[in-house]
Amino acid sequence: MRSRYTAFVLRGEAYLLATWHPSTRPASLGLREEDGPAWLGLTVRRARGGPSDTRGTVEFVARFRGGTLHETSTFRREEGRWFYVDGDIHAG
Image 1 (spheres, rainbow, N blue to C red):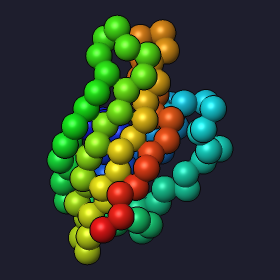
Image 2: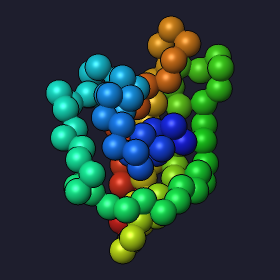
Image 3: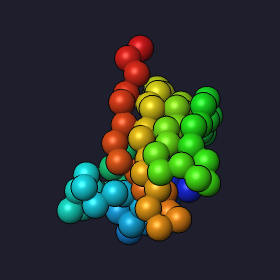
Image 4: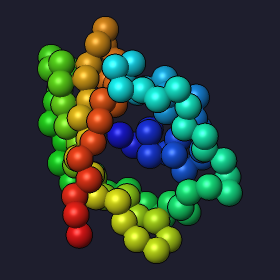
């Protein structure tokens, strides 16, 4: 999760796509420096899933100038690598 957050901060589209599960991965993200928020920090609230699990979740709050993103992300582990599948955004 932290590496994906860093990739969003740095606009690292290639890394984000490479760590996104093929079943839900978009063709592109179109990240450009002038697009998107100025990210200020990440707090991981809860993480579930370990080395022997094939599924996991991460609840996090990402702060950006003007607000926050509170999400629970779902991940799938395949061949020793974790892939982002999707996320549920928390209201409020």
